[in-house]
Image 1 (cartoon, helix red, strand yellow):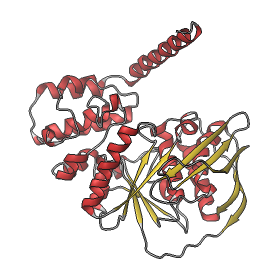
Image 2 (tube, one colour):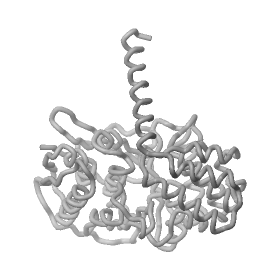
Image 3 (tube, helix red, strand yellow):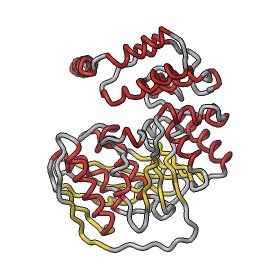
Image 4 (cartoon, rainbow, N blue to C red):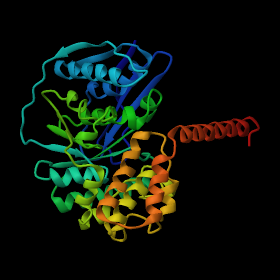
Length: 385
C-alpha cells in the first residue's frame, strides 16, 4: 500500500505566502514534496498529492490510499486516468485507489478566473495568444524545467513572464515545487510524469482559480499517450476545478509561424530545458535547435533576442533523439522547408541525418555514457578524490 497525506506546513522561505508539504509513503521509502508561492495562499488539500503517487503505484502495482477527504468526482476521474495509462504504457498496471472519506464538492464563484500554465515556450505562447480573452492568469512553475535553486534563471523567467502578463493585462501566479524525484524514480518526466506534476500544482490553486489550461504539445492528428494528453487531462476535473487541454489542428511549425512575428514573443520566447551555464536558451539542445531552425526557415531568427546568434546546419545534424516520436518536429521543419521553397542543401541533409539516425544507437550510446559517469563518480568517491 502507498499512503498519500498532507504532511503539514513547511517553513516558508522569504517572500513565500505559505509552503505545503505532502508525503508519498512507500513504506521502505518516502517522498516529501513541497509547493510554495509568493503570490497566493496555496490550498492545503490532499488531492494535490494524489497525482504524484500514481506512477509509483502503477509501476509497482501497489494500491494507493489517500489519508484525508477527496472529491468523489476527482477520484473517479483519477481512476480512469490510471486505467488509461495502464492500457497505454508498458510496465504500468491498473491499481486500486481509496481514501478515508469522499465528499461531493461545490464552489461559490465570485469572479471566475482561468489560469494557463506558461513556460514561455512555443506551445505556451500559442495557447495564450489564442485564448487571451478567456485566460486571466499565467501560472509559472519553478522546479519543472529548471531547479528552484537556480535563482538567476528563476529571476529571469519571472521577469519575462511578468512583462508578458503586463502587456496583456493578466495576473501572474508563481509556484515553486520539487516533484521530480517521486515521478522520475518510476517513469520518464516527459513521457509519463510532467502532466501529473501540472495537475498537482493545479489542485493547490483550486481556491484561486476555477479552471486551468494546459497548452498541448501535439496537434489533434498527432495525439498519443503522453504525460499531458487530450485523453487524460480533463479527467482531473471536478466541481471545484476544470482542466482544459488546449489543442487544435496546428502542428509545432504552424504554432511557430503563428507567433513568430510578435515582438513580445521575439523578446521573451524560452524553449530550453538544458540549463547550460545558466543560459535562458542554450542554443544547442534539441528544443533550441529545433526552434531556431524553424525561425531560420521563416527568415526571422535574427529578431529573437533570447537565442544565441550561432546556428548552422552542422548543429542540426548533431541533434540526437532517444525517443523516435520527437523526430516528428524535425520532419515538420523539413516539410515546411520544402513547401516554402527554402533552398539550403546543407540544412536539408542535416535534417535527414537527424531524422534517420537510429534511436536504438542513441539510447545505447547515452546509456553507456551514463554508466561511465556513474562508475567515475564511484571511483572518485571511493578514493576521496
